Image (cartoon, rainbow, N blue to C red; front, side, top):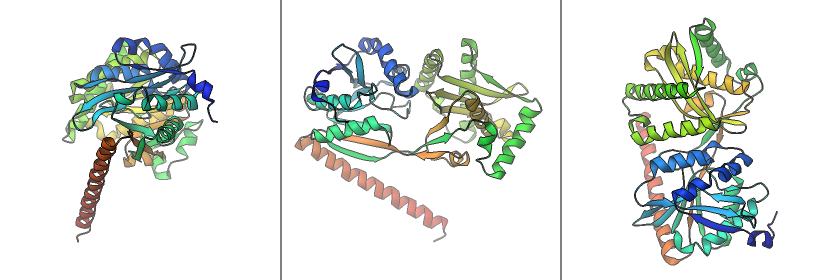
Length: 387
């Protein structure tokens, strides 16, 4: 539906650039998130924690708030800027840094998507034209309608838009019953899961614990850090918790999401010892698996498989219809019957010879990188074939 000009002209855009104004948006921001699927990575709590722990020198807030004639928040672009000597002021999503957030988007109240997209594009091309030099958006669902509307409006305002594939997310459809889900798996995998279940939960050796209090929340987070790092160390790698910033972020956002009722932190103990732990967050109908850890000393029990099965079983009991594994094309996701969800990376360049020249150089560099990557892949394949 085409937005009426008067509906768009009644909207105003303000640019939020300081923390106090960011904090003042919390309630209305989360109201928009709740009204549009309650994706946790879009919430004020998640993005405020990300900004608190990952902001870097040269970066500043660039949140665009769209309000109607009654000063009601009807749209939001949750962005920040980072200065680059080569590219100038580059606009990105909050949460697209070390937080590795997926399904980021521009928010709009239901039935106001067209109006908000048009108003944002108009502001970016006029009042805000001198405040940015490039927009780079990552972690976007390829089917995101709001981003599609904004991109179309930006093109109509003379901006150059380049879209390319991002990493795939993977999502599992959950039936009403656990046995119905198992029926979707291969016979061999179904038998293995049932056998593992009998040898652990069936005989009473294993129990599941959930963070259901402030004390158990802290305990569960400590288990997560311990098992994640022990697992990474066992394969000669450093885990994400080796970085103090990420650890501080996760502890902070865990408390916020726990208060919102969207945190699902649970772990499995075998004979009193934690063997696997999972940190997930929930939306209206979907659970998103964000971080996990397993005890390498119990690898024969396949604790990762047990944890996943426990996650799905609990999600089904709690009435969720989907489980999302987030980004990454690891083979185990297909083994659980998950479907691929493509994501996109979008680059927006304003009108002007200088900006477009820089974009052309970037395209050339990106093409060369892709060619070199493909060449290295071909060489590896030939070596594996003995040629």
